[in-house]
Image 1: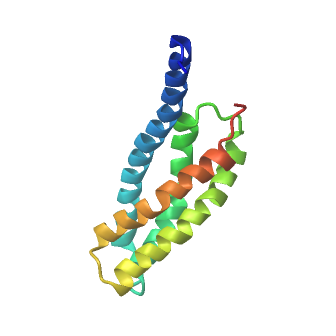
Image 2: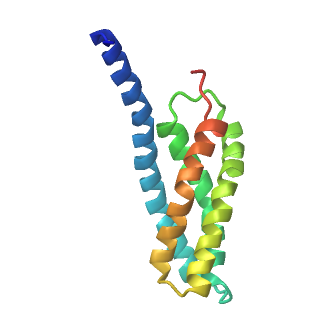
Length: 146
């Protein structure tokens, strides 16, 4: 069984388009998370609450970060989305809630129970929610006609 040149070109085009969105997601996610890291650390520094300071700062930063990350994804990552901005923002908060629960739990355990360095704990918390957030956003928030 052989595949003609036209079929190979179509397969490459489809794969490139699929990975282009994932690449945009990773780049925009990196930018958003760098900004989120600055927000988190700023909140942590000014947070007067000592009890679970890292976790409380994480929660506040996460809530702010969802709106920021949604805007970046809406404008740059999910270009073929036909979902209106405010509807996708609301849906983003719902979609990110799964990642929020997982990442908050990870941060809490690492910082408050295992005494892992704050910045390493932050990175682990972020990474724990990235994959789940991508699929929730792609399938439930930024839907396309395709």
